[in-house]
Image (cartoon, rainbow, N blue to C red; front, top):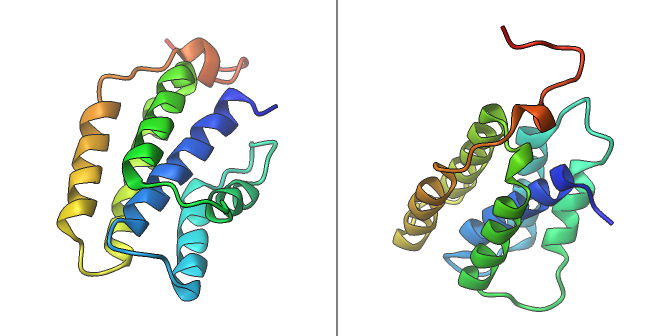
Length: 140
């Protein structure tokens, strides 16, 4: 069973994949670029899981899932686990989506539409500092 923070990362991987795939299937070179880009952007020394594993799980889905289904599933996961969504993580997720869209020129209308919808949908979500701040740090 995955933790809330792992669920958030899986969801953003799914959304990023939907953006990358919006203009057609992802070729082998693009898969590698996608993996490297998302892993680099999301890596953190204090996670107890491997971002790379999550990204490969998203990439290695054996059945085709359309962008709308991927988007809906991922946003449901993000909402369910949003208590862990720090402002920094939220911005990092937006950065991932933008970089993935820009990584495969040209940026298509479909990619732009998904990206703008994501920004609109994630904007009102506010995490709870009780969940995402380290216990030894105080906010004063």
